[in-house]
Length: 352
Image 1: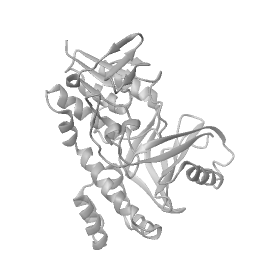
Image 2 (image 1 turned 90 degrees about the vertical axis):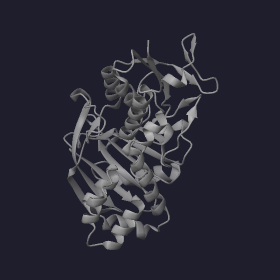
Image 3 (image 1 turned 90 degrees about the horizontal axis):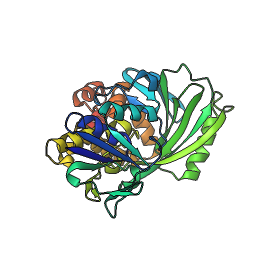
Image 4 (image 1 turned 60 degrees about the vertical axis):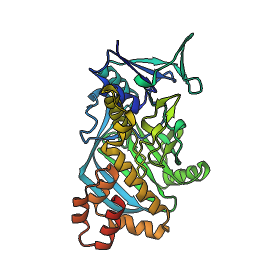
């Protein structure tokens, strides 16, 4: 019996399981927690047709059709048509993906990387590198990380929202976000190059300055580290890392669900065909997108806030979308910035 074992039940594990359908007789997912989606996030997924899995309507909280963007408190523009996606119940989304793949999810299954074994109840299982992948998430990522924290607020103001709100803060090289969540709630957070105390102080101030948010009850405060340093391949216990453990997060935006799923899919397809899972990931288009975004991030880190602000305001809405979503079409960017040849040349050079 041919089987695939996946360490970790996050987006990368879900992507690997979906890609493994029809190639393995049995797909087993070992999840250390007692539920899926333990890591907090905004739960946004762009609809680009690249993950090949449509979330069931029962797990979709909002269909997103536009994004409103600000820089240092000033309205930048509203993105329409080029921005399309979902806000999902992440737990339900992952459960649905594993069910669609026919995968078995084993909860409370702790992996010991030193021994290369999974503890399941009273048993110890040793996955084989030739038929297993490691999707252990950000604790196993070796590159640069940033911190993101978010409040879940109780308010019905965003129950019919079809948009996201992004507020760039050039002082911290990061942004605040307002994402609609399940009915009666909204997620408001911030991520950037600053410590917890500094980010929380700024997030509290951001909420107090917004009349829609300041009186909302704060249900909970969550935080997590996010891989922002780009691709960092490696092995844990002899198993190839996939997903955020390998750096599959878009460094400029922090988007991780879709990139992690794509990495898992590429690795599983390659493994099923008898190939190298790392090679499969290297050849996936999202890998180039992450590398380009990381180069852009490095360039922006070296700028003063005034220069960052000028850059953000100088890009057209379409170029913002090309960069943020990782599509990075050089032809589109060149046409959009034809009247700004210096800026176009600078950006195209970073695209490689």
